[in-house]
Structures are given as structure tokens and as C-alpha cells.
Amino acid sequence: MTATGKFLHTMIRVGDLDRSVKFYTELLGMKELRRNDVPEGKYTLAFLGYGDGNASGGGEIELTYNYGVEKYELGTAFGHLAVGVPDVAAACEAVRKGGGKVTREAGPVKFGKTIIAFVEDPDGYKIELIERK
Image (cartoon, rainbow, N blue to C red; front, side, top):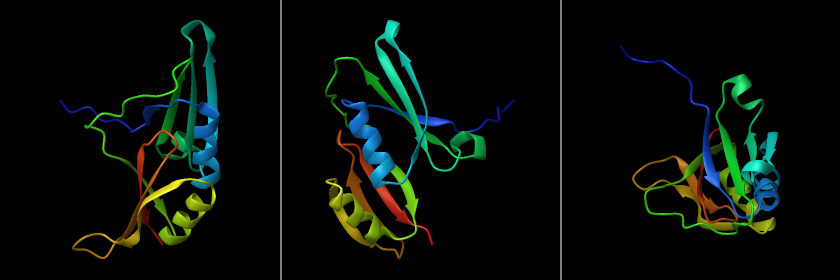
């Protein structure tokens, strides 16, 4: 038997929750959908997404801040998050103006026509911007 389900979220650990929420909301246009502080567990979760997130069928990003941990090793298995935007070049400029890092400028994917770019969040996670008109 095959289980059916729904993709809910991807969790990433961050070293400064407010800095990361600011990046995703102000530079990538997401909304903070909810936050859960768990003092007894010494962590805080912030869920971000577009629209109503899971309520409208979209996935979410769960940012996890563990009290007192300012930096993580990202590892080599994780690739990137992908975000569809109407204008990749304009999104790169907004990230740059907001102090973010653009690691690959807007342009066609190798051997294709889709316009993409890569940026990094404050913790170094790579985010692929994909043009979706």
C-alpha cells in the first residue's frame, strides 16, 4: 500500500532567528505564519511561507533557533531551497540592496532557457530563484 500525503515543511537551523526571519520576509517576500517558543526545550520555531502556507496547499520553511547556538556546519548533503519569483533579476537586486549575498546572477540555466539565480540566506543556505511569470 502506498501512503498519500502532503508536503508540509523543510526545517533549517539558524543562528539568529530575527535576522533570518527578516531575510525571508523582507528580501524574499514570505510571511511569518506562526512562531512557537519552547523555553523548557531551549528552542524557538518560526514557520514562514507564501500566502497561507499549508492552509492554502503551499509548503513552508521551519526556522529552528536553538538557544545559544550561533552557527552550524551546513554539511555537503543539503543542496538548496527553491523559490519561484516573477522577475529573477529584480529579486537579486532586492536581495543585494537588503544586504544579502547573490552567488549566481540571473541568467538561463546551463543548456536551457529557464532564468535562475542563487542567493544565500544569513546562515549560508543556498536559495535558487526560478523565474515564474
